[in-house]
Image (cartoon, rainbow, N blue to C red; front, side):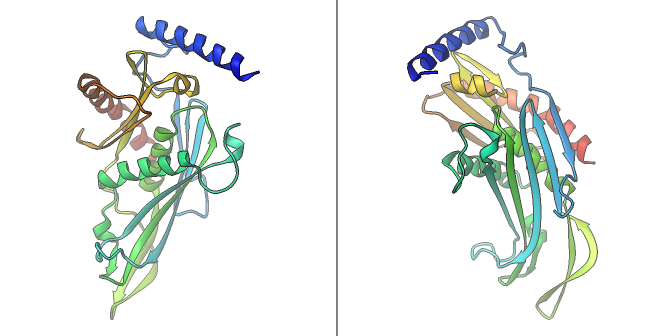
Length: 270
């Protein structure tokens, strides 16, 4: 398909989408605040400390947790380390390419990491071993297996589910040296953050945009809330602005929808 013909098709498709949204409908017949089918599987990687596979519509993400000891950051000498990385595999999308992480993958990892970190999901204070010398480091690597929109939420749910089921060796500190025992203990998870991404198409906000809706959106916002309904982090994408009224609408929706998703995550990881 030529670029000109492709542009015409996308323009017509967006006009149809905007018209339907004005009537409170979506192309795939979902409600404006309705997610696509969500499934969560845990323990999918045997050699990982914790893992999860999330399927959100046709979007699929696998997250694996690796735990080791490391040197703490200078500004947090008594706290452990938590890092999230993401890779969009070339086979996952016609637009994904092999090589170093793309800007999209870097943004994806940062948004997911921020939501989990700011919610204080993992008590990093309990991962400190020898202040200034040795701490426990938790690394979460995410592989995007198939792209069909809303990578932010699918990846976040995979990371949260993997961390909730992750286990690590118990360490004993003797003479300022940390020694691992054979006893396995859960990662100190305190909260279950949930991100909800909304896209604006025309003047309506829709939850969990698929690829087609993302191609037509002029603004995207991802809001992460904790168990108490507190907003922990937010990230706006695309160049367009958002009105205060729509910010409040997005916040209310993320809190309400987030409760439903959190219940499913907790049920799948108990």
